[in-house]
Image (cartoon, rainbow over all chains, first blue to last red; front, top):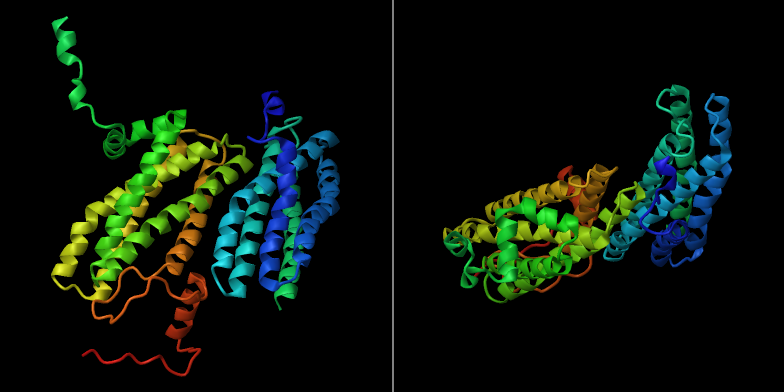
Amino acid sequence: MSVATQAPFPVPRGLAIALAAAGPVAAGGILAARAHDASPMLAAPAIVFGVVAATGPALYIATAAAGNAPPLAAVIRAFGIALGAFGLALSGLILPAAFVSLSSVSVATTVAVTSGVVAIAGYLGLRRLASELRAGGTGDVLGGASLAGGIVFVIWAIATASIAGRLWWDLAVEVVS
Amino acid sequence: MIAAVETAPAPAAMPRPALGMIDLLLRDRERMLARIHQGTDLAAIMRTMIATIAVTMAIVGATLGSYRGGVQIAYAAIKLPIVLLGTAALSAPALSAIGAALGRRSRLSADLALVMAALAFGSLLLVACTPLIMLGRSVDLDYHRMILAVVAMFAVAGAAALRMICRGVALEAAPGWRTAVVGLCVVFSLVGGQLAWALRPYLVRPRAPEVMFLREVEGSLFDSVTGAMRSARGIYERDAAPLGTAAP
């Protein structure tokens, strides 16, 4: 299968995953610079990796229970690529976000902009995860014929994004208040 | 043999490379997009497009500044190229990054060249509109109508540049190209709006007694828009607006 042998990114996958850690650190750094509190720089990557680690197994279990039993290796590979996609997207968005935030005196702008770029990168990461699960590995993980697999993924994505979003929002409000 | 001699281009008629590239941009954008897509002469394209943006936007800025006249001509001529080039430099990597995240084979240099070429095309359209701005000045078009006219010109030029970016990215038929273009538009609007806001004013009332190069750092464009919406609903954050001094 050509998809499995094709490089998923124009950069090494290790670098993409490193960007997935560095991106939230940078987004937390913008928030930290405004709030004069360094804690977001540690908390932001912890939210990203912590929430994915906590909810990822649930996706595997639920898709398997729904009748789409994907090989574990394919799911792990898809998560790695999705995290890399999140990091790559964030690497392109962080500079504009830093500019908009630092050129304004408004705290609300900083919170809105950093939250926005993390949300966009998160959406792109989820979208890449869905496409990797659909097309990669066995080619039948979230096959077009499986409505149940698609519903499971959408519910999982909403739950994961909501948990991460709530944690990020609480962090942002706490440090700027 | 005679035919070959007759059809060979005369060396003297060949345009200079930079001017030839601008001519290609104006007359045959499909070929320009194909060159960028193939990665041919990207460095030369970038150099020409950056120079084109700098020169044309300086002309547009000077024309806008001429509405007030005096030192504002120089101020606007300096600031407007900075706004466009700075926004492009900050925003173009988003096109590559979002595309790469979705599996598009992205090349930062090609994407930068594409964005610069599109902006150069928009800048050339704007410079073609400068006679209209000068016409407005010469018939004493009032300040608010002039603002609306300038906004309309920038909207037309921006739409043309966006269309060129869409066609350039669509050539690849890569996964996620639409999302990448939408992402670029969002980032470009936010950064461009904020940078333009931070470096304002460009168009100043003719009766303004003095002009400044930059205003003090204030809230963002977003804050200003929300503040204006609150004021429109009768919710004011200060007791009274500052009173202007009567014109002599």
